[in-house]
Structures are given as C-alpha cells and as structure tokens.
Length: 210
Ligand code: CTP
Image 1 (cartoon, rainbow, N blue to C red):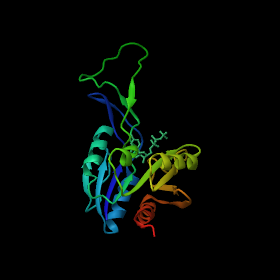
Image 2 (tube, rainbow, N blue to C red; image 1 turned 135 degrees about the horizontal axis):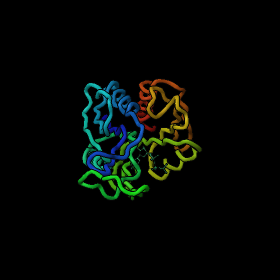
Image 3 (cartoon, protein in one colour; image 1 turned 30 degrees about the vertical axis):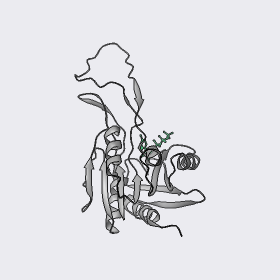
Image 4 (cartoon, protein in one colour; image 1 turned 30 degrees about the horizontal axis):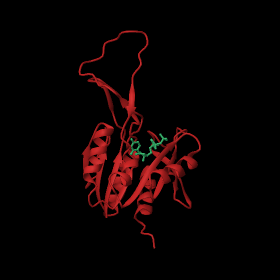
C-alpha cells in the first residue's frame, strides 16, 4: 500500500527572523513513517522542521508553513491508499509577514492572525481523497467527545485521540497513550513507546473492512 504521513510542527513567519510554532517534536509522525515502511509499504513523509532522522526508505518532503504542507499533501495524494495526518499544524498565522525585521516600539503589540488552511478537513471535501483517512486529536479535556466530533466533521476512518494535558505522554515526549476512536467503537492503546503505538496504528489503518 502507499502511505502519506504528515508530521512535526509548522512555522508561521512573523518577519524574517521570527515565527509562531508549537512544541511538537515530530516523533509520532516519524515513528508512523518508520512503522509503515517496516511493514513493507511505500511511504511519503511530509514534515515541518524537526531534529529527527528520516527513517530509511521513506520519501521525504520538507516544508515549513501550513500553506506549504497543504500544497504538498494536495500534490502528492495521487495513488495514496492511507493518509495519516499527524502534523501539529498551526491553526493561525500572521496576516502579514514583514520583509524586514520588526523593530521594538510601543509597550503592547497586537499581532493579527488568520486561519491556516485545514488540511485534514480538505482531504475528502476539497481533494476528493477516497482512501483510508486517519486524523489526530490533541486535546486537554473531553478528549473522546472532541475526537468523535472531529471524526464526523472531517470524515475520517478513525481518529487517534491524545491527551496533551499529561506531560509524560504526547507532545515532545518519547511515549504516548492514545485511544483510537472509530465511528462505533473505541480501541484504547496502553502507554508505550511511540514506535510501538505507531505499529498498532498502521495495523488498524491497513485492515480492509469485510
Ligand atoms: N490539521 C490539519 N490542518 C490544520 C490543522 C490541523 O490537517 N490546519 C490536522 C492535524 O494534523 C490533526 C487534526 O487536524 O490530524 C487535528 O488537529 P486539531 O488542530 O486538533 O483540529 P481542529 O479541527 O483544528 O480542532 P480544534 O477545534 O480542536 O482546534
């Protein structure tokens, strides 16, 4: 099968030397790419900036902004059987990015932000993707309820729900504990390394419904 996986944070520039980003390390997405490759699949990994080594045998596309990730996903979707969107895409970006470094001025500064394109939300409705679609939901509260809502709204096959209020799992850590949220059932995965969790996610993503 052919997998497309997004990973890592995005960077949204404010000026030539500053940007908005988040604490995603990219580890979960890179572990998914490695796991899918390990299982013999073709893998394209589209990633924001991380410190990680690209798993062997994986096609790699480096991006920086949400807009670039959106375009890369759109352009590389042909022939993809399974798309797992794991990237921690910035939801908002500065409306203007200056060409020169911003100088210090008043005591308060208001930065105007606008929404970035919703990649996961565009997969079915804009890109017409018909393969298996897996999204991530990073939440601090009402984790399963929000994931179920996201599952419906973005027409995913399942959502990997992640409680990011805990510092021992999820964002920027080596381990994770997630629940796979399907339309009619939940599959809780015990706390484990992101590599082991990734294998379980890939397994579930490749099950063909009978
Ligand atoms: N995602 C995306 N494009 C965006 C934002 C998010 O593809 N611009 C994807 C992420 O990769 C992840 C999923 O959407 O798979 C969940 O991201 P999240 O920001 O939690 O979802 P939102 O629908 O933006 O929900 P919320 O209301 O929680 O902000």
